[in-house]
Length: 545
Image (spheres, one colour):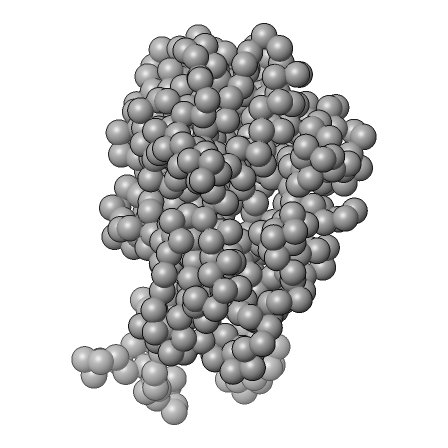
């Protein structure tokens, strides 16, 4: 009876969004209540204990929440941090501007993984259920309709096997309690169940179940993943900073989470929690889009502006990568002792360096302006084009670098980009270099995480040689046309007298050959006498004597 009352009180705390006596100065960490209030607090208490020890000027408390109360607490500003599943992180990011600062690591013996999935299982003695397709006409229990792994991923795996929601005899939900799901299957209350990975192993370690009593359906084996698995893998739970939480404080929390010891379980903390750098949750977003789940209920019905923004996401990511470089360096200095994560960061830095090298060495001029028109980035080609070193360009506007008429033209093109949210292209002659260069300029918008324009990029290509070539070709064409117009051709059959060699024109008049040819071409005639005719004329003269 006492245990029942304790659970009832803890459950009431989870609904109200408090745990114990949280004071006004506490930093509240909301956690999803997936195993019941008592086990949830026991499991996550190690996080607040570690942060309180490492950051003694602040006091962190754990606040259990269900899926619905978690969103309300975030919307009302009742939390500074939250630990949520990937689906709810995507929703909090889109709706409330939350950002991930770490991704959870799960453990099994000496193996760790920052990914998780779902486990679909039945009792080992159910000979009639050996594969997912055998679940047609059977009952299924899972945590809740909003549970990512135990329901969304499960439903996706069932769909891959051709099993629709209606093909199951019934689907029950255990009020967000994974333990209730497992026990319902064990006690024969339902045919099969689904929970997130690690739950079965944790309950077995706690002595609540024997894994031999269960059969895993659609069992999969992924390299480096040590847990029972029935689905594809997705990034683990995210530790998120809410929009109003101080960024510097969040950086300290992230650093100490990454350094949290998690390789030596204790009696107090048998299931240790580890953290790594934030993973890429794009795969989770695509699954939510596929099923049109929050925040993508209206996915596919996008506006023109949203469609344009999607096409420019690679540019936005390139801009963000410059900001991420500082974070990569910072984290690499703080987690060198963790070889695996260090290698991940090293690989990421190499990729960023490759992108930076491409931009630095491209023959095109690349520069970025903020909303106030100040240059925040120029590559070496752009600096040469402006005729100034990069350090004299950064932080200045066009009006400080160019004549007013030139600056006004550049400002007008920037305004066109800002107002139309699209790219503009034009040609411009820059007189600063010697000799002047004619450039083809393309400008376009860059967006922040809210979808608002916060910068403008521009790429300029030197087309001076191309323009010179066009002029040369044009001159040659004019010369050729002039030459062709001067050429007059004689065509067709020309009637000529066999005796006197006169030529008949179209009006049936006869003309001397040289007169006819001169009138119909540019040829001119001069008269002389060939040697044969000379000899003949001499004979005629001699005969006349």
